[in-house]
Image 1 (tube, rainbow, N blue to C red):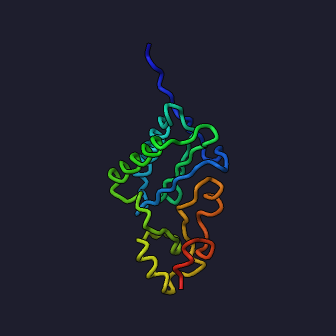
Image 2: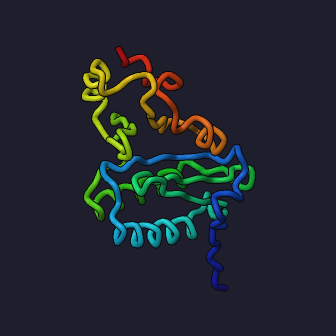
Image 3: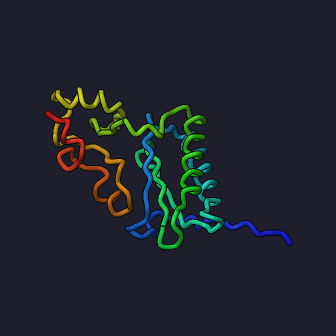
Length: 169
């Protein structure tokens, strides 16, 4: 008897519950228009086949500012398992190679400078935070948020509302 393959439920991001689990991967540079087309196809293919212990995951994604990949799972339906999370990290590693950029380095900081997203190693951000170029009103990205609600409310905030504030003079 042939086993049927199960597929995850890829849904629009807006249809996920506020408690949906979030992973944010900041890219070291903005994706080009051509890269974004390939990226969307790759992400949708991965998420459409993503499962935890053979059970499909209800998942979604966003690519804000063409520089971040946000993956979400509604864990009320099926929690992501260690193996499914490992699979997603392996997928992100493949994207790093394919697009020749950083996505997994958590020792970097992203912030807005005029209309551009800046991506700096934490040590460089700490130095810059002692200059007038960065202040408590600088918009920073808290890529440590854990669910959709936090993502929508606490991801993109002034530095004074974030862990980044401790570095600002």
